[in-house]
Image (cartoon, rainbow, N blue to C red; front, top):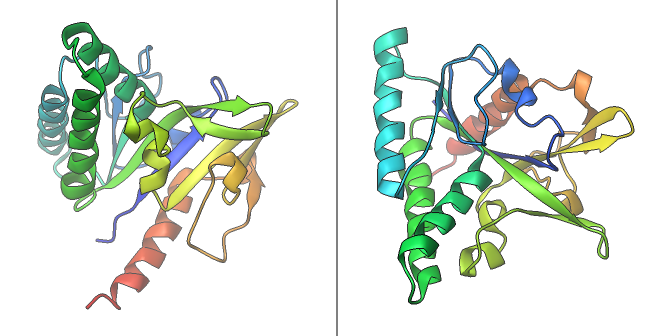
Length: 220
């Protein structure tokens, strides 16, 4: 099965979590300061002290999903990834006083490697992230932990497929290709943006995977 890694970002209260409702065969790792509100398999992560603990919890809940539903999920979502990296930063700053950002970068890399080397091999992975707007440049950036990992852009630098949700008046716009809005895709046929009512996240993920499957035929 072809799998993909997808980033969803936007300003607070723009509907990032709401967009997840169309996903099927999904397990959501929810750590966003509030309980997950929709009727989909999920884990509300109350707290964690280390990345190893978070990885162990995620692995355990994937196995629990299989026990409950008879098969593994197709997609694993981290909602939100930005909150997780800020938690990592906060936990380490509390206990490491000398050169903490070296430890922070190491812990974040451990989480990113787990996602890339273990999860993406078997599941789609969706990473939800909060963004902030720079009024001077009129561009958006992800909310990241400090240190070298955050300075290079964070998870957007390691994701080929990314969408951004913009609020214009009372309407939501889904940007699929716009560097200033953290939206990118490798698929030429995808539109630059669509109104939110016309966008289905599961259909979008299926399209990405179909293209990924076509590309994998040429892997040597």
